[in-house]
Image (tube, rainbow, N blue to C red):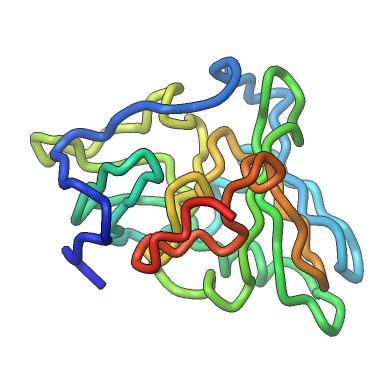
Amino acid sequence: MTNKLPPGQFETQKWPILHQGDVYPFNESTWKFKLFGEVKKELELSYQEVMELPKTISSIDMHCVTTWSKFGNSFEGIAFREFLNLIHINDGVKYVKIYGYYNGDPFGYSANLPLNALLGDDSLFVYKWKDEQRNWQEITPKHGYPLRFIPPAAFYLWKGSKWVSGIRFMKEDEEGFWEELGYSMTANPFKEERYR
């Protein structure tokens, strides 16, 4: 799928900034990452514990529902599967919700995704990226610092929660923040699944 422009999209070299609500003011002493839902035992991680997890560098294309696409984005982060390795999920788990801060609420934003689509190197909780000059830098607070989920290119970017706070494991699919407002549950840009 690399460098393939989905229908209704245009290519950009910049990384536009779009988000709902206030920019989260990171506080390492209070920041937590929770793994919960259909799991044998819930787990809560500190920022330091998260940052000690194995790292992955990957190139991921981004497609925003507002019609821009940005190809070949280099990110450094923690693969979704590393969090999955920390817990035992219950039988029948097929979906997740990835949560993020929204106006002060750690679980105010969420995006639903199918679990089996998130097991590769293109499913990252990122903290660094290569900018337009190809230099590594931390992502900015407006882009989701300290940790932002970047979904595989098979999903529109609204599935990429900013200021992430946890993952809930689910047996049944469930609407996230934008899905409750009428956006597509599956969000495949190549099928132009923007709205329901």
